[in-house]
Image 1 (cartoon, rainbow, N blue to C red):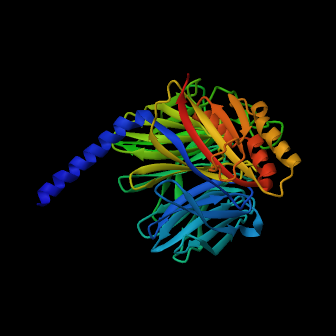
Image 2 (image 1 turned 180 degrees about the horizontal axis):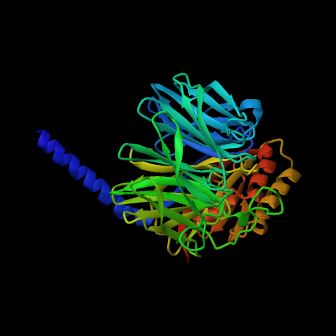
Length: 509
Protein backbone atom coordinates (compact mmCIF):
# COMPACT_ATOMS: atom_id res chain seq x y z
CA UNK A 1 0.00 0.00 0.00
CA UNK A 2 2.82 2.40 0.84
CA UNK A 3 4.44 1.68 -2.54
CA UNK A 4 1.17 2.44 -4.35
CA UNK A 5 0.79 5.74 -2.48
CA UNK A 6 4.39 6.61 -3.25
CA UNK A 7 3.95 6.09 -6.99
CA UNK A 8 0.63 7.97 -6.90
CA UNK A 9 2.43 10.94 -5.33
CA UNK A 10 5.12 10.79 -8.02
CA UNK A 11 2.45 10.83 -10.73
CA UNK A 12 0.66 13.79 -9.13
CA UNK A 13 3.90 15.76 -8.90
CA UNK A 14 4.77 14.93 -12.48
CA UNK A 15 1.34 16.02 -13.69
CA UNK A 16 1.55 19.29 -11.74
CA UNK A 17 4.94 20.06 -13.31
CA UNK A 18 3.58 19.13 -16.73
CA UNK A 19 0.61 21.44 -16.13
CA UNK A 20 2.87 24.38 -15.24
CA UNK A 21 5.01 23.81 -18.32
CA UNK A 22 1.94 23.52 -20.53
CA UNK A 23 0.11 26.59 -19.21
CA UNK A 24 2.86 29.08 -18.42
CA UNK A 25 3.36 30.27 -22.01
CA UNK A 26 -0.29 31.28 -22.17
CA UNK A 27 -0.82 32.78 -18.71
CA UNK A 28 -2.64 36.09 -18.36
CA UNK A 29 -3.85 38.37 -15.56
CA UNK A 30 -7.53 39.01 -14.92
CA UNK A 31 -8.64 41.58 -12.35
CA UNK A 32 -10.94 40.11 -9.71
CA UNK A 33 -11.49 42.85 -7.13
CA UNK A 34 -10.42 46.24 -5.85
CA UNK A 35 -11.07 47.88 -2.50
CA UNK A 36 -10.53 51.36 -1.14
CA UNK A 37 -7.87 51.87 1.52
CA UNK A 38 -8.11 54.05 4.60
CA UNK A 39 -4.57 55.39 4.17
CA UNK A 40 -3.41 57.95 1.66
CA UNK A 41 -1.93 55.42 -0.80
CA UNK A 42 -0.80 51.80 -1.11
CA UNK A 43 2.98 51.60 -1.32
CA UNK A 44 3.67 48.09 -0.04
CA UNK A 45 1.67 44.86 -0.03
CA UNK A 46 2.30 41.52 1.66
CA UNK A 47 0.19 38.48 2.53
CA UNK A 48 0.01 35.73 5.12
CA UNK A 49 -2.11 32.76 6.17
CA UNK A 50 -3.30 32.41 9.78
CA UNK A 51 -5.93 30.01 11.11
CA UNK A 52 -6.88 29.20 7.52
CA UNK A 53 -7.56 32.89 6.77
CA UNK A 54 -5.69 34.33 3.80
CA UNK A 55 -4.64 37.83 4.84
CA UNK A 56 -3.52 40.85 2.85
CA UNK A 57 -1.64 43.78 4.41
CA UNK A 58 -1.58 47.01 2.40
CA UNK A 59 0.71 49.69 3.78
CA UNK A 60 1.00 53.31 2.74
CA UNK A 61 1.42 56.75 4.23
CA UNK A 62 -0.11 56.81 7.69
CA UNK A 63 -1.31 53.26 8.26
CA UNK A 64 -1.66 49.58 7.36
CA UNK A 65 -4.96 48.17 6.07
CA UNK A 66 -5.85 44.52 6.71
CA UNK A 67 -8.07 42.41 4.43
CA UNK A 68 -9.02 38.78 4.02
CA UNK A 69 -8.74 37.22 0.56
CA UNK A 70 -11.02 34.39 -0.56
CA UNK A 71 -10.55 31.72 -3.22
CA UNK A 72 -12.25 33.93 -5.82
CA UNK A 73 -9.81 36.78 -5.25
CA UNK A 74 -12.33 38.94 -3.37
CA UNK A 75 -11.05 41.22 -0.59
CA UNK A 76 -12.94 41.87 2.65
CA UNK A 77 -11.73 44.68 4.97
CA UNK A 78 -10.81 43.60 8.52
CA UNK A 79 -9.10 46.54 10.20
CA UNK A 80 -6.63 49.40 9.81
CA UNK A 81 -3.76 50.45 12.06
CA UNK A 82 -1.95 53.76 12.38
CA UNK A 83 1.82 53.82 11.96
CA UNK A 84 4.23 55.44 14.42
CA UNK A 85 3.62 59.21 14.41
CA UNK A 86 1.14 58.69 11.56
CA UNK A 87 4.04 58.79 9.12
CA UNK A 88 5.39 56.14 6.79
CA UNK A 89 4.92 54.92 4.24
CA UNK A 90 5.20 51.32 5.36
CA UNK A 91 7.62 50.68 2.54
CA UNK A 92 8.86 47.27 3.64
CA UNK A 93 6.58 44.65 5.20
CA UNK A 94 7.10 40.99 5.93
CA UNK A 95 4.99 38.55 7.98
CA UNK A 96 6.45 35.44 9.58
CA UNK A 97 6.15 32.99 12.46
CA UNK A 98 8.70 33.26 15.25
CA UNK A 99 8.63 30.27 17.62
CA UNK A 100 4.87 29.87 17.40
CA UNK A 101 3.83 33.54 17.24
CA UNK A 102 2.86 35.37 14.05
CA UNK A 103 4.29 38.84 13.51
CA UNK A 104 4.17 41.57 10.86
CA UNK A 105 7.37 43.60 10.61
CA UNK A 106 7.03 47.06 9.07
CA UNK A 107 9.73 49.44 7.87
CA UNK A 108 8.33 52.90 8.53
CA UNK A 109 10.31 54.77 5.89
CA UNK A 110 10.07 58.38 7.05
CA UNK A 111 9.43 57.50 10.67
CA UNK A 112 12.95 55.99 10.70
CA UNK A 113 11.72 53.06 12.78
CA UNK A 114 10.99 49.36 12.50
CA UNK A 115 7.60 48.42 13.92
CA UNK A 116 6.65 44.92 15.04
CA UNK A 117 2.97 43.95 15.17
CA UNK A 118 1.58 40.75 16.58
CA UNK A 119 -0.94 39.22 14.16
CA UNK A 120 -4.11 38.45 16.10
CA UNK A 121 -6.45 35.53 15.43
CA UNK A 122 -8.62 37.47 12.97
CA UNK A 123 -5.61 38.97 11.19
CA UNK A 124 -5.72 42.41 12.80
CA UNK A 125 -2.60 43.86 14.41
CA UNK A 126 -1.27 44.81 17.84
CA UNK A 127 2.02 46.74 17.99
CA UNK A 128 4.47 45.06 20.37
CA UNK A 129 7.80 46.67 19.53
CA UNK A 130 9.34 49.80 18.09
CA UNK A 131 13.03 50.22 17.18
CA UNK A 132 14.28 53.68 16.26
CA UNK A 133 17.32 54.54 14.17
CA UNK A 134 20.60 55.30 15.94
CA UNK A 135 24.13 56.28 14.94
CA UNK A 136 25.09 52.59 15.09
CA UNK A 137 22.28 51.24 12.91
CA UNK A 138 20.98 51.91 9.41
CA UNK A 139 17.24 52.21 9.92
CA UNK A 140 16.80 55.74 8.62
CA UNK A 141 14.53 55.79 5.58
CA UNK A 142 14.15 52.03 6.04
CA UNK A 143 12.75 50.38 2.91
CA UNK A 144 13.35 46.60 2.78
CA UNK A 145 13.05 43.81 5.34
CA UNK A 146 14.05 40.15 5.12
CA UNK A 147 13.48 37.48 7.80
CA UNK A 148 16.18 34.80 7.87
CA UNK A 149 15.67 31.67 9.95
CA UNK A 150 18.89 30.15 11.24
CA UNK A 151 19.45 27.01 13.31
CA UNK A 152 18.80 28.48 16.76
CA UNK A 153 17.22 31.87 16.10
CA UNK A 154 15.57 34.12 13.52
CA UNK A 155 16.93 37.46 12.34
CA UNK A 156 15.50 40.53 10.64
CA UNK A 157 17.75 42.11 8.03
CA UNK A 158 17.06 45.76 7.25
CA UNK A 159 18.11 47.96 4.37
CA UNK A 160 17.25 51.49 3.42
CA UNK A 161 18.04 54.68 1.58
CA UNK A 162 19.64 57.40 3.67
CA UNK A 163 22.63 59.72 4.04
CA UNK A 164 24.62 56.99 5.82
CA UNK A 165 23.26 53.79 4.25
CA UNK A 166 24.12 50.22 5.10
CA UNK A 167 22.83 46.79 6.10
CA UNK A 168 21.70 45.83 9.62
CA UNK A 169 20.81 42.58 11.37
CA UNK A 170 18.55 42.22 14.43
CA UNK A 171 17.72 39.09 16.41
CA UNK A 172 13.95 38.56 16.69
CA UNK A 173 12.95 37.68 20.24
CA UNK A 174 9.96 35.43 20.99
CA UNK A 175 7.88 38.49 21.93
CA UNK A 176 8.68 40.23 18.65
CA UNK A 177 11.21 42.66 20.07
CA UNK A 178 14.41 43.25 18.11
CA UNK A 179 17.95 43.08 19.47
CA UNK A 180 20.72 44.65 17.39
CA UNK A 181 23.37 42.20 16.16
CA UNK A 182 25.45 43.88 13.48
CA UNK A 183 25.44 46.82 11.08
CA UNK A 184 27.72 47.24 8.06
CA UNK A 185 28.15 50.74 6.70
CA UNK A 186 28.03 51.17 2.95
CA UNK A 187 31.32 51.96 1.19
CA UNK A 188 32.67 52.18 -2.34
CA UNK A 189 32.96 48.38 -2.59
CA UNK A 190 29.64 46.94 -1.44
CA UNK A 191 26.23 47.75 -2.90
CA UNK A 192 24.03 48.67 0.04
CA UNK A 193 23.26 52.31 -0.73
CA UNK A 194 19.52 52.08 -1.24
CA UNK A 195 18.66 48.44 -0.53
CA UNK A 196 15.24 48.16 -2.17
CA UNK A 197 15.40 44.39 -2.69
CA UNK A 198 16.81 41.41 -0.77
CA UNK A 199 16.69 37.64 -1.20
CA UNK A 200 18.26 34.59 0.48
CA UNK A 201 19.50 31.23 -0.80
CA UNK A 202 20.72 28.27 1.24
CA UNK A 203 23.61 26.30 -0.25
CA UNK A 204 24.76 23.10 1.48
CA UNK A 205 23.57 24.33 4.85
CA UNK A 206 25.04 27.82 4.42
CA UNK A 207 22.87 30.95 4.12
CA UNK A 208 23.55 33.75 1.66
CA UNK A 209 21.84 37.13 1.39
CA UNK A 210 21.71 39.17 -1.81
CA UNK A 211 21.04 42.92 -1.88
CA UNK A 212 20.54 45.51 -4.58
CA UNK A 213 22.10 48.95 -4.31
CA UNK A 214 19.85 51.52 -5.93
CA UNK A 215 22.25 54.45 -5.59
CA UNK A 216 25.49 52.57 -6.28
CA UNK A 217 24.13 50.62 -9.23
CA UNK A 218 24.97 47.04 -8.36
CA UNK A 219 24.28 43.88 -6.35
CA UNK A 220 26.14 42.31 -3.44
CA UNK A 221 26.36 38.86 -1.84
CA UNK A 222 26.70 38.24 1.91
CA UNK A 223 27.30 35.10 3.97
CA UNK A 224 24.97 35.00 7.01
CA UNK A 225 26.10 33.05 10.08
CA UNK A 226 24.08 31.24 12.76
CA UNK A 227 24.52 34.13 15.23
CA UNK A 228 23.07 36.67 12.78
CA UNK A 229 26.38 38.23 11.81
CA UNK A 230 27.33 38.53 8.15
CA UNK A 231 30.24 39.27 5.80
CA UNK A 232 30.51 40.45 2.21
CA UNK A 233 31.23 37.76 -0.44
CA UNK A 234 31.20 39.52 -3.81
CA UNK A 235 29.91 42.61 -5.59
CA UNK A 236 28.85 43.21 -9.20
CA UNK A 237 28.53 46.60 -10.89
CA UNK A 238 26.30 47.82 -13.69
CA UNK A 239 27.61 47.75 -17.26
CA UNK A 240 26.25 48.05 -20.80
CA UNK A 241 26.49 44.39 -21.83
CA UNK A 242 25.66 41.50 -19.51
CA UNK A 243 23.77 43.26 -16.69
CA UNK A 244 21.39 46.22 -16.31
CA UNK A 245 21.78 47.54 -12.77
CA UNK A 246 21.56 51.34 -12.93
CA UNK A 247 19.12 52.01 -10.11
CA UNK A 248 19.01 48.33 -9.01
CA UNK A 249 15.57 47.94 -7.47
CA UNK A 250 13.70 44.61 -7.04
CA UNK A 251 15.63 41.46 -6.09
CA UNK A 252 14.25 37.93 -5.92
CA UNK A 253 15.43 34.39 -6.60
CA UNK A 254 14.48 30.80 -7.35
CA UNK A 255 15.95 27.30 -7.46
CA UNK A 256 15.41 25.32 -10.67
CA UNK A 257 16.83 21.82 -10.77
CA UNK A 258 20.45 22.04 -9.61
CA UNK A 259 20.67 25.75 -10.36
CA UNK A 260 20.08 28.68 -8.05
CA UNK A 261 19.32 32.07 -9.57
CA UNK A 262 18.97 35.65 -8.38
CA UNK A 263 16.85 37.95 -10.55
CA UNK A 264 17.36 41.72 -10.38
CA UNK A 265 15.38 44.53 -11.97
CA UNK A 266 15.98 48.25 -11.99
CA UNK A 267 14.19 51.55 -12.11
CA UNK A 268 16.81 53.35 -14.13
CA UNK A 269 17.97 56.74 -12.88
CA UNK A 270 16.67 58.10 -16.19
CA UNK A 271 13.20 57.98 -14.66
CA UNK A 272 14.07 60.35 -11.82
CA UNK A 273 14.57 64.09 -11.68
CA UNK A 274 18.36 64.28 -11.73
CA UNK A 275 18.36 68.03 -11.05
CA UNK A 276 17.74 67.19 -7.39
CA UNK A 277 20.19 65.54 -4.98
CA UNK A 278 18.16 62.32 -4.80
CA UNK A 279 20.35 60.59 -7.41
CA UNK A 280 23.87 60.65 -5.95
CA UNK A 281 25.77 59.40 -9.03
CA UNK A 282 24.48 61.53 -11.87
CA UNK A 283 27.00 60.40 -14.48
CA UNK A 284 25.24 57.44 -16.05
CA UNK A 285 24.37 56.22 -19.51
CA UNK A 286 20.87 55.04 -20.27
CA UNK A 287 21.34 51.72 -22.05
CA UNK A 288 17.72 50.62 -21.91
CA UNK A 289 15.69 48.56 -19.48
CA UNK A 290 16.21 44.91 -18.74
CA UNK A 291 15.92 42.17 -16.14
CA UNK A 292 19.26 40.64 -15.12
CA UNK A 293 19.67 36.99 -14.16
CA UNK A 294 22.60 35.90 -12.01
CA UNK A 295 23.65 32.34 -11.32
CA UNK A 296 24.80 31.51 -7.79
CA UNK A 297 28.04 29.54 -7.65
CA UNK A 298 28.98 26.96 -5.03
CA UNK A 299 30.52 29.66 -2.84
CA UNK A 300 27.33 31.73 -2.83
CA UNK A 301 28.71 34.41 -5.13
CA UNK A 302 26.74 35.89 -8.04
CA UNK A 303 27.84 35.30 -11.62
CA UNK A 304 26.28 37.33 -14.49
CA UNK A 305 24.22 34.93 -16.60
CA UNK A 306 21.49 36.50 -18.79
CA UNK A 307 19.63 39.75 -19.51
CA UNK A 308 16.11 40.03 -20.91
CA UNK A 309 16.07 43.40 -22.64
CA UNK A 310 12.92 45.46 -22.91
CA UNK A 311 11.48 45.95 -26.39
CA UNK A 312 8.20 46.89 -28.07
CA UNK A 313 6.62 43.57 -27.01
CA UNK A 314 7.36 43.89 -23.27
CA UNK A 315 6.54 46.24 -20.38
CA UNK A 316 9.72 46.52 -18.31
CA UNK A 317 10.28 50.27 -17.93
CA UNK A 318 10.72 51.32 -14.33
CA UNK A 319 10.64 47.93 -12.56
CA UNK A 320 9.80 48.21 -8.88
CA UNK A 321 8.87 44.68 -7.81
CA UNK A 322 9.49 41.13 -9.09
CA UNK A 323 7.47 38.28 -7.60
CA UNK A 324 7.84 34.53 -8.12
CA UNK A 325 4.32 33.42 -9.03
CA UNK A 326 4.95 29.67 -9.37
CA UNK A 327 7.84 27.28 -9.93
CA UNK A 328 8.78 23.63 -10.30
CA UNK A 329 12.08 21.92 -11.10
CA UNK A 330 11.96 23.01 -14.72
CA UNK A 331 10.77 26.62 -14.81
CA UNK A 332 9.34 29.54 -12.89
CA UNK A 333 6.73 32.17 -13.72
CA UNK A 334 7.60 35.70 -12.58
CA UNK A 335 5.54 38.87 -12.35
CA UNK A 336 7.25 42.24 -12.85
CA UNK A 337 5.50 45.37 -11.58
CA UNK A 338 6.44 48.60 -13.33
CA UNK A 339 6.02 52.19 -12.31
CA UNK A 340 6.71 53.82 -15.67
CA UNK A 341 4.97 51.30 -17.94
CA UNK A 342 2.13 51.03 -15.37
CA UNK A 343 1.86 47.31 -16.07
CA UNK A 344 2.41 43.81 -14.75
CA UNK A 345 4.60 41.74 -17.07
CA UNK A 346 4.63 37.95 -16.76
CA UNK A 347 7.93 36.21 -17.55
CA UNK A 348 9.15 32.62 -17.72
CA UNK A 349 12.56 31.54 -16.38
CA UNK A 350 13.67 28.11 -17.60
CA UNK A 351 16.06 25.73 -15.91
CA UNK A 352 18.95 27.07 -17.98
CA UNK A 353 18.35 30.56 -16.53
CA UNK A 354 16.91 32.11 -19.70
CA UNK A 355 14.05 34.61 -19.31
CA UNK A 356 11.31 34.98 -21.90
CA UNK A 357 8.17 37.16 -21.90
CA UNK A 358 4.69 35.64 -21.61
CA UNK A 359 1.91 38.26 -21.46
CA UNK A 360 1.34 41.58 -19.72
CA UNK A 361 -1.59 43.61 -18.45
CA UNK A 362 -1.61 47.39 -18.44
CA UNK A 363 -2.99 48.04 -14.96
CA UNK A 364 -3.95 51.67 -15.43
CA UNK A 365 -1.84 52.71 -12.44
CA UNK A 366 1.85 52.82 -11.60
CA UNK A 367 3.08 50.05 -9.32
CA UNK A 368 5.50 51.32 -6.74
CA UNK A 369 6.90 48.38 -4.76
CA UNK A 370 3.36 47.17 -3.96
CA UNK A 371 3.07 43.77 -5.64
CA UNK A 372 2.61 40.40 -3.96
CA UNK A 373 1.99 36.88 -5.28
CA UNK A 374 -0.29 34.61 -3.24
CA UNK A 375 -1.65 31.11 -3.76
CA UNK A 376 -5.00 29.75 -2.53
CA UNK A 377 -5.34 26.02 -3.12
CA UNK A 378 -3.87 25.71 -6.64
CA UNK A 379 -4.88 29.18 -7.85
CA UNK A 380 -2.28 31.93 -8.21
CA UNK A 381 -3.16 35.54 -7.45
CA UNK A 382 -1.37 38.87 -7.54
CA UNK A 383 -2.21 41.74 -5.18
CA UNK A 384 -1.14 45.22 -6.28
CA UNK A 385 -1.10 48.76 -4.98
CA UNK A 386 0.23 52.13 -6.03
CA UNK A 387 1.79 55.20 -4.49
CA UNK A 388 -0.69 57.38 -6.39
CA UNK A 389 -2.54 59.58 -3.90
CA UNK A 390 -5.53 59.82 -6.25
CA UNK A 391 -6.00 56.04 -6.51
CA UNK A 392 -6.44 54.83 -2.91
CA UNK A 393 -7.01 51.22 -3.93
CA UNK A 394 -5.64 47.72 -3.48
CA UNK A 395 -6.31 45.42 -6.45
CA UNK A 396 -6.34 41.63 -6.94
CA UNK A 397 -5.66 39.65 -10.11
CA UNK A 398 -6.18 36.00 -10.97
CA UNK A 399 -3.56 34.32 -13.16
CA UNK A 400 -5.17 31.95 -15.65
CA UNK A 401 -4.79 30.73 -19.25
CA UNK A 402 -5.25 33.55 -21.74
CA UNK A 403 -8.72 33.81 -23.28
CA UNK A 404 -8.81 34.20 -27.04
CA UNK A 405 -10.39 37.62 -27.75
CA UNK A 406 -9.42 37.77 -31.41
CA UNK A 407 -12.03 39.57 -33.50
CA UNK A 408 -13.91 40.79 -30.41
CA UNK A 409 -14.29 44.06 -28.57
CA UNK A 410 -15.54 44.85 -25.08
CA UNK A 411 -18.80 46.55 -24.10
CA UNK A 412 -18.93 48.20 -20.67
CA UNK A 413 -22.55 48.92 -19.68
CA UNK A 414 -23.26 51.35 -16.81
CA UNK A 415 -26.87 51.74 -15.64
CA UNK A 416 -27.53 54.52 -13.12
CA UNK A 417 -30.36 55.86 -11.05
CA UNK A 418 -30.23 59.14 -9.21
CA UNK A 419 -31.37 60.11 -5.75
CA UNK A 420 -34.76 61.84 -5.50
CA UNK A 421 -33.16 65.03 -4.26
CA UNK A 422 -30.81 65.24 -7.28
CA UNK A 423 -31.71 68.28 -9.39
CA UNK A 424 -32.09 68.28 -13.16
CA UNK A 425 -29.04 70.52 -13.40
CA UNK A 426 -26.95 68.07 -11.36
CA UNK A 427 -28.07 65.13 -13.51
CA UNK A 428 -27.32 66.98 -16.73
CA UNK A 429 -23.87 67.90 -15.43
CA UNK A 430 -23.25 64.26 -14.46
CA UNK A 431 -24.21 63.08 -17.95
CA UNK A 432 -22.01 65.70 -19.59
CA UNK A 433 -19.05 64.72 -17.41
CA UNK A 434 -19.55 61.02 -18.15
CA UNK A 435 -19.74 61.54 -21.93
CA UNK A 436 -16.67 63.80 -21.80
CA UNK A 437 -14.57 60.82 -20.64
CA UNK A 438 -14.15 60.04 -24.34
CA UNK A 439 -12.06 63.21 -24.64
CA UNK A 440 -10.07 62.49 -21.47
CA UNK A 441 -9.28 58.79 -21.96
CA UNK A 442 -7.97 57.91 -25.45
CA UNK A 443 -8.45 54.17 -24.83
CA UNK A 444 -12.23 54.64 -25.04
CA UNK A 445 -13.34 53.76 -28.59
CA UNK A 446 -16.87 55.09 -28.21
CA UNK A 447 -19.48 56.22 -25.65
CA UNK A 448 -23.19 56.26 -26.24
CA UNK A 449 -25.93 56.94 -23.75
CA UNK A 450 -29.66 57.31 -23.36
CA UNK A 451 -32.57 57.71 -20.93
CA UNK A 452 -34.70 54.65 -20.19
CA UNK A 453 -37.79 54.39 -22.41
CA UNK A 454 -39.02 50.93 -21.34
CA UNK A 455 -42.71 50.52 -20.48
CA UNK A 456 -42.37 46.95 -19.11
CA UNK A 457 -41.96 47.96 -15.46
CA UNK A 458 -38.74 46.05 -14.81
CA UNK A 459 -36.27 48.94 -14.83
CA UNK A 460 -35.93 48.95 -11.02
CA UNK A 461 -35.69 52.74 -11.03
CA UNK A 462 -32.66 52.92 -13.32
CA UNK A 463 -33.00 55.84 -15.70
CA UNK A 464 -29.69 56.37 -17.53
CA UNK A 465 -27.57 53.88 -19.50
CA UNK A 466 -24.04 54.49 -20.76
CA UNK A 467 -22.32 52.04 -23.13
CA UNK A 468 -18.55 52.29 -23.46
CA UNK A 469 -16.58 50.33 -26.05
CA UNK A 470 -12.98 49.12 -25.55
CA UNK A 471 -10.70 47.17 -27.85
CA UNK A 472 -9.09 45.05 -25.13
CA UNK A 473 -8.53 44.38 -21.40
CA UNK A 474 -5.75 46.95 -21.20
CA UNK A 475 -8.09 49.77 -22.22
CA UNK A 476 -10.67 48.78 -19.60
CA UNK A 477 -8.04 48.81 -16.84
CA UNK A 478 -6.69 52.19 -17.93
CA UNK A 479 -10.24 53.60 -17.97
CA UNK A 480 -11.14 52.17 -14.57
CA UNK A 481 -8.17 53.69 -12.74
CA UNK A 482 -7.76 56.82 -14.88
CA UNK A 483 -7.81 60.10 -12.97
CA UNK A 484 -10.71 61.42 -15.09
CA UNK A 485 -12.83 58.37 -14.19
CA UNK A 486 -11.89 58.51 -10.52
CA UNK A 487 -12.76 62.23 -10.47
CA UNK A 488 -16.12 61.43 -12.08
CA UNK A 489 -16.93 58.82 -9.43
CA UNK A 490 -15.99 61.25 -6.68
CA UNK A 491 -17.97 64.12 -8.20
CA UNK A 492 -21.13 62.24 -9.17
CA UNK A 493 -21.16 59.74 -6.31
CA UNK A 494 -23.19 61.89 -3.86
CA UNK A 495 -26.23 62.05 -6.20
CA UNK A 496 -26.16 58.40 -7.37
CA UNK A 497 -28.95 56.25 -5.94
CA UNK A 498 -27.73 53.00 -7.48
CA UNK A 499 -25.52 51.49 -10.17
CA UNK A 500 -25.80 48.26 -12.17
CA UNK A 501 -22.74 47.47 -14.28
CA UNK A 502 -22.07 44.65 -16.75
CA UNK A 503 -19.32 43.92 -19.27
CA UNK A 504 -19.43 41.57 -22.23
CA UNK A 505 -17.33 40.63 -25.25
CA UNK A 506 -18.86 40.66 -28.70
CA UNK A 507 -17.65 40.09 -32.24
CA UNK A 508 -17.12 42.92 -34.68
CA UNK A 509 -20.08 43.15 -37.07
